[in-house]
Figure 1 (cartoon, rainbow, N blue to C red):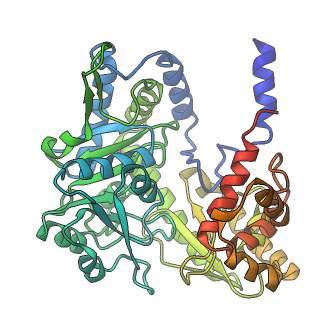
Figure 2 (figure 1 turned 120 degrees about the horizontal axis):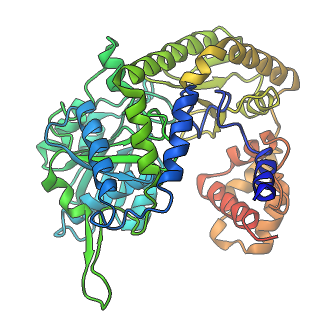
Length: 468
């Protein structure tokens, strides 16, 4: 047993750190060691349980109802009901599926979403045949435009979508105005608060001015909120809330027309471990309202300080004033954000590059956790040094002929041999190993159209995930 664990620990040495506040995407760290240990113990305690049938493991039903009640209280849903899911993407998928199935008379349903909506909505569109009608956001604020969203709605629209906040820019869409657009047409309205839903209510409770975004707004019919982000629970826990039980009912799936047990599911999964649910319940109970209010304010204050400090760094700017705990940064022409990201990794910090999009420049995404706040001076110093080094090196240059060729390539016409060649050119090699520096790769992806980016990364993932 010790040999197996030693092997796992050795393999982990190549991973980014999940604790310590230096990984500014993908993981969220409260800095509370006792909460982390409690979560690990709850995971182990419930690792063999199955949430498929709440009558077999009734404790899971209690834990789920407790967590949903907590979220409903935070998000001001007096009659709200909900479901614990495996993550924000599953919550979003279920919100779209529910809206589709609530309108069986619409043969070709669509949903209206701002261009900043999470990519999970496009995944839902692909899975469920709900056409995504994408509406450009305001160029100055990066927020959804209510008039343009209203104009995009028609008789096929089953769902209108907004973010609180958007992942890419950290701003909250005008929820009351958008809810009014949907309500006037009898359309469901979903607020994606996966990353902000556990922060905004506690900031509001602490005296920060927070624009209305939750069930207090008439017309909001569903909200997604992740526990494994700013509730700081172990991975695998999100909640999809509906304003009423009637609105949730189309989410459920049942099938009795086969010789086995009657399948009855509240989520995309049938069999699902009770471990993430138990761990989430334990951590939420342990931290409590006072703890979350303190953690939210700590992260938020650090986010504002970081934004101010970044604005003071020559060559950096903030895309939008943060409204929660997310910061998006861009650089001027003396450097590219991809090189800055590599330089940050070299200094022990992971920040997430975001490729250019519809005239919006490439940027860096930083999610601030409470554990990062005590190290903010270190982070700012690393950012200053990374920008200076990137400026000294200059932007990564992509050959103009290569950039033009990328724009003309139809990925649907490429075979495996062609993808192998393109991956080699992109610096991704055979896909068996990861490049030491990602800036040249990201620079090439940045000049490629989105469909080619997708195809190249799918080809890379396909090659990366093959048994050796």
